[in-house]
Amino acid sequence: MHLADFMVSLIVIFFMVVYFLILFRVVIDVFRNHEMSGGVKALWLICLLFFPLVTLLIYVIVHGSGMARRDTADIDAARKAQDAYIRDVAGATASPTDQIARAQELLKSGAISQAEFDQLKQKALS
Image (cartoon, rainbow, N blue to C red; front, side, top):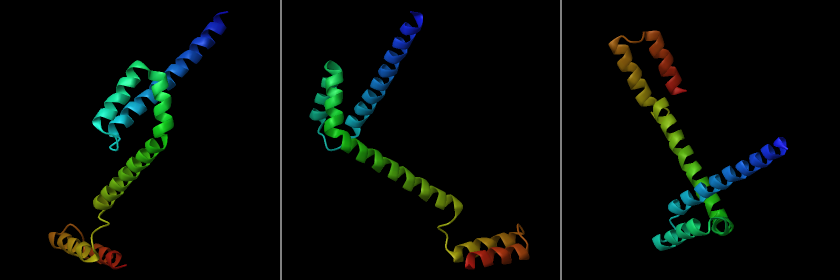
């Protein structure tokens, strides 16, 4: 009998966690949906407060595709920002002239040898 009680409790806890995850996703989506006015957002949140399960299901059915589009747009924006940051940090946006000028400055300061300068210059020109 104890194993059956444990299994039932485990299943109930699992569905509660899934319910709260979906509920939080919907609440976050309500706030980031710029197509809705403030009054409509407030109405959705009030309905979520008083009729949570029904409102949650209706919102997911009505706005599910919009949620997916907003998620995809956010992921794409984050990826583009990360790629731009990596290019900026890696110096990939610098022109060959800039790279050679930087290498020339390093050569003048004594930080690199003539052979290293020639290697950097060849790399920039290729």
